[in-house]
Amino acid sequence: MKRIPGAADRISKLPSNIIDDILVRLPIHDAVRTSILSRKWRYKWLTLPQLVFEDSFSEQMTKELGVLSEEKLLAAVYQALLLHKGPIVKFSLAVPEFESCSSVDHWIHFLSYHDIQEFSLSFSTGSAHVLPYHIFYFLQLRHLKLRLCRFKPPPAFGGFSRLISLEFISMDFEAGQFGTFISNSPLLEQLRVFDGSTFNHLEISAPNLKIFLFRGVFESISFKNTPVLAVVSIALNRAVNQRPGRCSKPMKLADSLPALEKLYVGYNFLKLLRAGDSVAGPLGRPLEHLKVLQFWKMHMEDRQGMLDALHLIKNSPNLQKLIIVIEPSRVEVVENLVGQDFSACCLKKLEQVELHFMSGIGSEVELIKLVLANAPGLKKMKIIPSENLLFHARGLEILKKLIQFPRASPKAEIKYSDSKSSRMRYKENKGYL
Image (cartoon, rainbow, N blue to C red):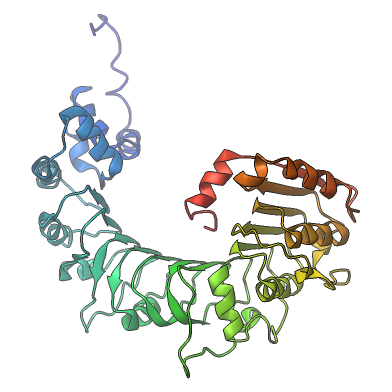
């Protein structure tokens, strides 16, 4: 491109803080390319406080080089670290499908001399990468995300005192030390644990925790000192048969989670609550602050499971949104909800209801009938049928039947949707998060 004589170099005249803000928002490979824009920009990328080598970086290198080898990735990261000037507060690396990447330990050692506040390391394949002890020197750490690593703090480790968010994905760690590690992170606000080591008992003690998302396996769970925990999502990957003598004490949800606003319950966890009498037994105080309740992979043909779910619904007087993601079944059951009365309880403030993967069995239809008849503030009921029902004439018959049910709310409308985006979201096991 030819430069127009007398034209002002507006890029070079931008204030330094504006240039820094622009560079931070660019992918690192694009940030490096800005060095050709002007003299003022030439070395700006070397002072970036954030070094991010995630999937987009690998994809761009693969696009440019044809094949991304481990050597080329190592060279790119080494170059960025060795040429870098100034503080590094964020480092993020997603390692492609290489058999190993031993240089990661050297990079962590290098970063331990910086005041790292945000660190993310993700492996996509192979066995868990054993983290070097240098990572426990990140004393300024506020955000930590690890995938497919082995996390084993040394005995003298006192925790990350400034940690705000923690995400473990497919992690290998000492389950018995996890509760201690969490309690030693007093500022922790967000905790996400997906598909890692199995817990016998999972204890969560975090006075500032606001969000807790879990997918995995444990035999029991307890919440202690969680006064502001507002969002809880728990999905067990498999049903847990508690061993004799290991059954957890009844967990009264309102007592353990006094600030709970959103609750996402997987079917296997619902059964575990039943084993501890947390649902079917005395519920304690009502869940006064609960506004959103979602059941994940519900077996509508399971009478006890349905009754457990209804107990939770009835104990939520301020519930505004109810979502049920159904596990498909061909078992015809109607009597599961016969005799259930909602007229004097919890549905007065209910505004939205969603049923995903409805197959048309009797208990599903009966639930819809109960909600329509007892929710005076209901505005929308969204029904996403299963694929078998969507392309079957029976689906239209069921819809005609639903439209005829009496409604307590004159504003209530039923939306029968075949949304592909919703269908994909839940099929990928992400709908409850």
